[in-house]
Length: 251
Image (cartoon, rainbow, N blue to C red; front, side, top):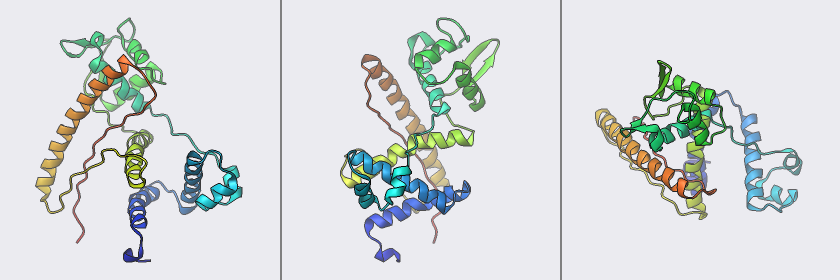
């Protein structure tokens, strides 16, 4: 089947699978492993849409054999130490008790306004020592003279597993929004700026501007989200993100 014979939905799926195939090859995941994961995803989504459906009905919806449906269990998303550390950094920048002249103050490990207390306030599923090790390794904080000092809020994981977990936390909501807009489940903002005939220098300049503007936006949203959550907690997930892609176009 060539490009002209594919339906619009098939063209989209094929385009999505290209970077997925790149990740599979890099991670040594073969076709058999990918097929098994696809079966799990199809069954999970079918039961999400029709919780009372029988195995036969799910088989008709997905094409997955009934024997496979009965043995498949959906996996949960892995817990991310990086997301816990990012939550701590956000509170450190916004909680009045942890600020001095408007900037994050240096913290001792213990004490009423110490680092361990900050981790407890963040309500993350990680021990203070674990969060501290992640922040030290990523360069977000330094520890000197018995104090932990804030360096940067830019949380970039270095460990491959943590990078993958961070990707799950950002990529899945974005793709969910895109697909939701396509199938009519949701109507949410999902836009990108695209220019395909720029010089390398121009692309580099735009990428730098985009990163600076995005950081300003995310910091402003962070501050407001912290305040709103303090007023009233709930169970609704909100995700907003940005990305930059720049590469030479193939002729």
